[in-house]
Each structure stands twice: as structure tokens, then as C-alpha cells.
Length: 196
View 1 (cartoon, rainbow, N blue to C red):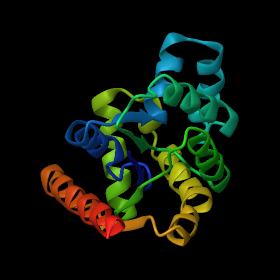
View 2: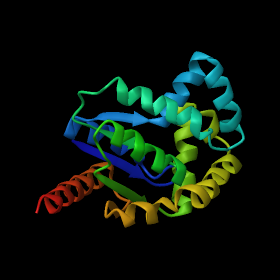
View 3: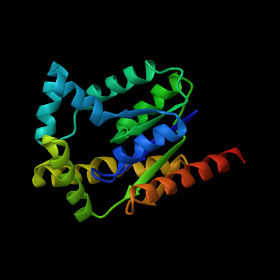
């Protein structure tokens, strides 16, 4: 089973690349953003709670996100694997995900981190906000707040996954196709090295 975590700040390209990875490797795409926006669009109580955090540029609490992830995994027990997009976002989530996967006798295979400079990240996210109408992507101060949150809460996961020998860093600049080819090369080489 192939379980991939795509790692990087907002605008790094996780969502764009995860869809291609999902199709290429026949995995189930788990996007916390999609799950959350689905709840917001549906106007559920969970969605209303999440929207308050999102409008303030803050991360939605772990309990809400973890419950959604668990439901998605349980609903796809026969999958060839999962590509996690935007999760885990902090050490507690990473540890909880490891426990959840272990209960299902699976584990994270590899974590791929995209590196993109801040100015480019802000430009990409604001453009995405205009194109897709995402309310939390249209305010530059909210976007910059999310980048600070990422550095404080999510970036430390690099050490966590490096200690497990599962962390790969790659350049997040270039055409979508160039980045996708580099991702596949990295995944295939990593999996081959684990078999040797």
C-alpha cells in the first residue's frame, strides 16, 4: 500500500499535484480543504464552526479534522493507498494519523515537501482565491497569517518524518507537468530504495 503525504505551505501546489498523483498511482485523495469546504458549502454545524476559524486565518481544531479523516479512511478500506493533502498540519495530528493508520495495519510511505518562496506563495493563493471564489484566499493579510501559522505549527513536522526516514524535499517551482514528473521520480526511487 502506498500512502503519501504532500507537505508544504498554502499555495505550494499540494492540491494541484495530489490529483495527478491520485490518478497515476490509483490512490484515494484526502484533502482536508475539500472536506472542510464541503461542510461549509452544505451549511452544516461542523461547516459553520470551521468557517469561523477559516475567516480568521486560523487552523480548524484537530478533533474536527481527524474525525473527518478517519471517516474517509474507513469508507475506503480496500484502497491501494491514500494521498494526504493538507494533513497532518501539526505534530499531534501526525502522531494521531500514525496511530489511526497502525490500527488499520498501514503506515505513511513517504512525505514529499514542496519548497516555494513566500512572495510566490502569496501570489498563487490570491490568484486561486479569484479563480475559485475561495473566501479565505482573497485577503492578503489572511494568507500571510496562514503562512505564519504554517511555519509555527506545520514546518516542525519535517523533523518528525525525517526521523522516520520518510521525508523528501523538492522544488515546488516549474510547470505543473515538470513538478509532477519530479514527484513520480522521487516516489518511485524512494519505494525502490525501501525494497532493497
